[in-house]
Image (tube, rainbow, N blue to C red; front, side, top):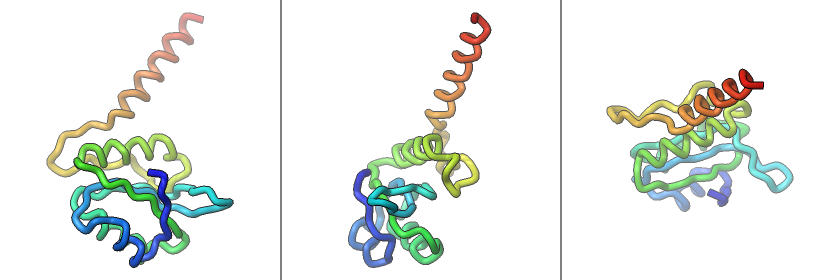
Length: 125
């Protein structure tokens, strides 16, 4: 997901297939570097979701899309992005699970495991 594009309806239509499933980051480019401000996914229509953002998010100038083969992969990428950048994002809450599918965030379990290990090591010191 290294490609960054200007967030305009025309550019979204050129880059993202109409019925794609996927994950995306929205943000700004500053000093030739992309800075994510919001992350999300679409389980059915990535293009239409990004088109909504292009009309509704003033101040957000660029996007990075990732078309995925599965809803699960889009969810995992969204979760990963939220855990990596959550403190700097406009997203207030953890990504929701896809409707009617019981996928769990793989990073929440990892975070808990790391915290438990650190706590145990602290008790031994």
